[in-house]
Length: 211
Image (cartoon, rainbow, N blue to C red; front, side, top):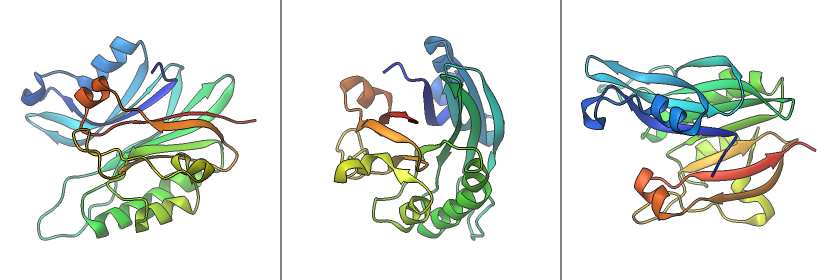
């Protein structure tokens, strides 16, 4: 797809199940892109988390985990990455995230994302938010984030594409949101045999610009 920026979730680093590979570094190397990896899980067996890849140099603005959700049994830690990169001499704020599986958990994470990440990023637009939100288009999470940003898949009245799973695509769980001044030239879920091999989610791909 030759993107300027790619946001990836669920990457392994030095874990046995993925052959001890640093997946973020390896994908970045193969694509000749710069990257930053944020580990949400760090264990003796390796690390696991998310990454942003960029063709152009970037500045890391923030990377970390969301506040833990009080539960009898803690869920998997989740977090976000925020970089600033320049494309055609314009700075862009890019945020990548992966929200949890519980309904209440996701709502708390979405509010934290809005207050602690999106709000400060909007002070220096344009802003792009990407990720696996584990939430449907009618969800409270989508409403929380959609109050500040626009879902690119809903341009021209289109329904969000079904991104999960790649074997039986039944629901949309993955989104790309943009700030109001961003023009969406094209957006789609990239469905191909290679995409189905790479992940259990189809990616959202968008061509965007600021007039």
